[in-house]
Length: 155
Image 1 (cartoon, rainbow, N blue to C red):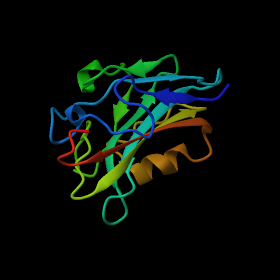
Image 2 (image 1 turned 180 degrees about the horizontal axis):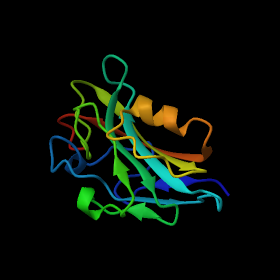
Image 3 (image 1 turned 120 degrees about the vertical axis):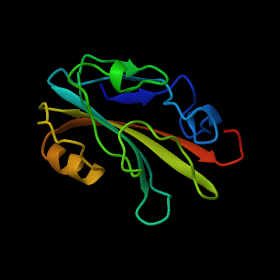
């Protein structure tokens, strides 16, 4: 069984509705996953845009999600996250979801879910690089969902 990640709000490789972007309500889309390995102790979720100028742009970081979790509801916020779940810093230097907001052109947005063999220590508010270093050597499985967005396209 492999880890799969999907959203009822958009199909893989398809446009993301503007509701989930800086041009809309800027709320997180609903996410659903399956295939978490039985020996997983925690999950981490990263949303990033590799097409952003520079070295890409991180939109959302969550870690220490319980492995029993099968998804996240639309517009999830810090209060609604499971008790031990923690947030990292996005590239706006804040926690929480920040939706697609490309300066120009159509960008790809990757939601990546990681199943880990441990519960990570509290890393404070880690950046993506710091979270990746903490996850190093603990990855059991990985699933990815890619959507696209171009400003002014309504999706």
